[in-house]
Image (cartoon, rainbow over all chains, first blue to last red; front, side, top):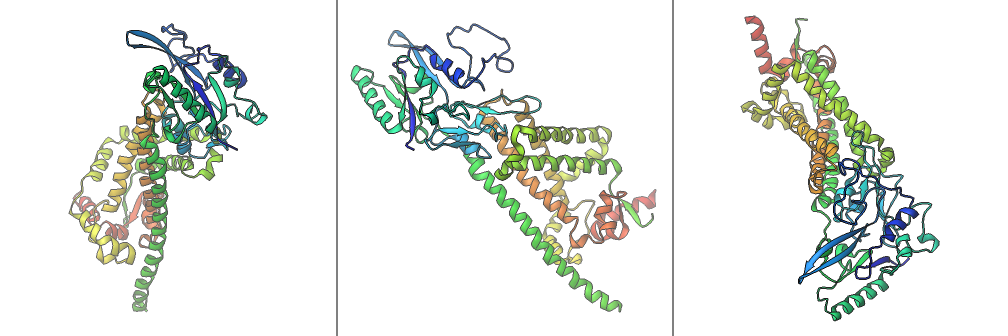
Length: 282
Length: 219
């Protein structure tokens, strides 16, 4: 299957949040009522239309609103916040048992049944996307994030449908399709923005982390939209997965082999010493 | 009983076994993260629950011991951190001693030799690393920065590799050909009544035996 992707055009988005609703509705995610430690107040007006306050195990997609001052004008910017489905995905790297993996169309899928709840993906994601419903005392947990509508039993893509967020988007700010085609489409839209005078226009996700499977058409720098300019898989993730784990296996193996050799050698040596002593006794 | 010397008192023996049981449970439930094939055992987080129960024992047991035996605790901690000429002598003699079973190569050793000191040192230092990094991961997962939590995992696993490997060495050495007969040697000191035979004490911890026998005469 060809690599698929979503193209999000921030300049077309009206922040109706229809995608948020469609995401929850299709994936059967109940409303999220913030509780400690997310916040100590159940509902607070903090001066924004944004709601709910953050991504959560049951909120996989959230629209963010930003007020930015530029050239004496205030701009109201909208950003889509959900899994970016990276090619070089920190979560896939760090998942100890392969519960997180790339599916055939390039998306970061996961098997919730085999998730052990370790939560390493939560800390390894450069975008802070995966969320866990971890119990503070027992540690019982499962990770959740955007599945791109491929959850078992709720798989839209297998049935030939678009993801729910794309399907519902009224201004077509979200498009689903082959990544190569969307890459070309995104580049032409960015060029059009540049021609209009948006000199900083940028296609986010073309190269970031080996190429994202959710790409953003932006009319300004990514930081202005709250996106990391140069997202990286954290060094600690690489150190744990690619260095420490093999070292652990090597150390464990060498110690056991070494002890085995020592036993064989030392037993022989001990017997050799005991024999002459016995002969003397005789 | 004249032929035996007390080596480990009862509270020390109890702490040893309780702590070992907790450590083995923690080791096995943690090992799953290193063995993808075992991950099926960890589904639905139940090994995480067991890991936490064992962690509570791992933390509480030494604290209870310390509060009831603070003098022995202090002596023990000093033993792990003060190294001297005997330990250097042990280091040079160790290969010949443990590989070729040449008991004459080993100079008389105090209460615990450098190898035991090293293990004791690792148990103390990495035990503390386990507890500190573990508690941060347990209770500050939602609050601490992601980078800090990732370093906690890293150091928790460094401690796991070092102390896990050393546990194999520790268990193995209680079976080592030099430790025979096992019943009057190391096994009796920890499993049995906490005593070793005079013969064992003289050959394995000569300096310590001299101190103990001298002390007895004075008393």
